[in-house]
Length: 158
Image 1 (cartoon, rainbow, N blue to C red):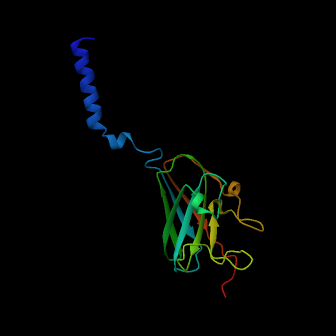
Image 2: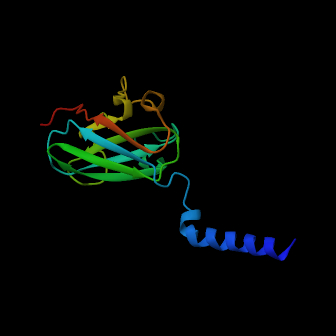
Image 3: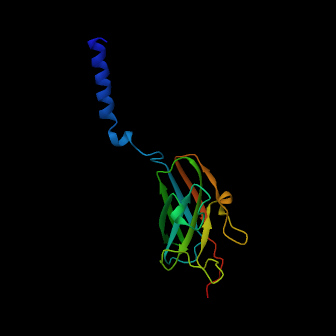
């Protein structure tokens, strides 16, 4: 290799390192991609909305500890916003619940029905139980996506 070729290669490598710092080269898969979830149909501004993003049926919709991401949304005008950032393209389902009393869990009655509002992507609802992952599943291509989830209250307040 000639000296001139070696200098050109060295200059190209230095330019690349200056133009693209390590932090830009090492961004996680999905960096810059986001899913914005607007939760509507809340019957009060009390509490907050807890949202969970799942990439598999395991744990959906009730076990947010098995979700790949969770977030909380502040309620204003009986709506809330949940943001999931740095999401890779793929298939997902989202569940949400209206944590009115801020105890960090979905309250249920004596037969197991939710006493607080619940919802899922695709507005999936269950028949005699929670919605299934397959009914709530949607494909996300990356970039910025926005979905709306309607909250349902299954048990009337006393």
